[in-house]
Image (cartoon, rainbow, N blue to C red; front, side, top):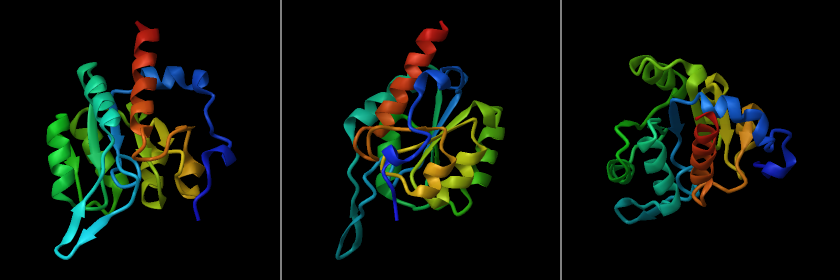
Length: 179
């Protein structure tokens, strides 16, 4: 049973987290429930459609242009995610991952980025270990209580409805304040 972000103590005191936001060198995103609203559309031949928010995509491009590595770690495997990542210039795409914490650790090591300089965005139980290890754990507004329990920040927007853009804006604002 999920709960609303307004029920969770981690709801944003954003100013407190500006130093942590300004240290982020890698943004790691889950897909279903973060980049999408979590619904899966199936046709007679299997998974047919995922819906992505174009504002999230623009935010991803902006943070990447600002020098932040953007990566995807998803429990599901989907050609649609591969295509969307390619459109956005996301080179680090890990799909079909059972152990997201191990994937995060490998990715951070391969990029020589300490975990404390990673921000992870998730929405559900499989994301919780990865969120807990990151320097900055972010849950989307409609996340499950397991993700909310380890989150440092919670977006005001739901997954697939601008939550990632909100996080990207936080990162860009923190970079501007640091400069």
